[in-house]
Image 1 (cartoon, rainbow, N blue to C red):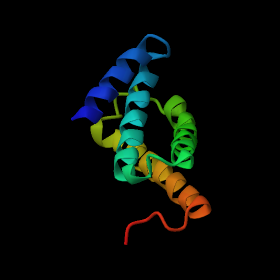
Image 2: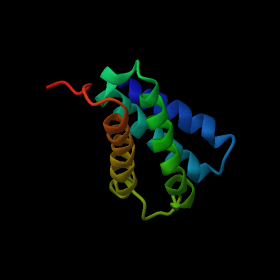
Image 3: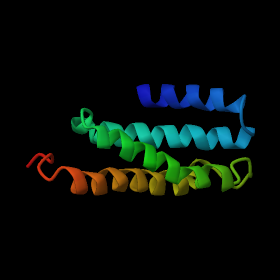
Length: 108
């Protein structure tokens, strides 16, 4: 629930600074990043975890600004076409960074 509240806040904040359709994408990106952070929260004390999340968010920027969010054909299901790859990209960044910097942090 907290993830959705933060995403609504980010979307509302983004509406004032970017085009309104990109604000929806910023909210979706926020949900994705918070979900990835929650999945791998055990790595929160590692500096490379936060760098990986930043790289994951940077990889989502083209999707945010190039996707026609205001198009009437983009519904909640259509937005999932953005959210799922964004989640996988951000989680992949954390996974690859974990492989590079810390071999023994995954719980067995």
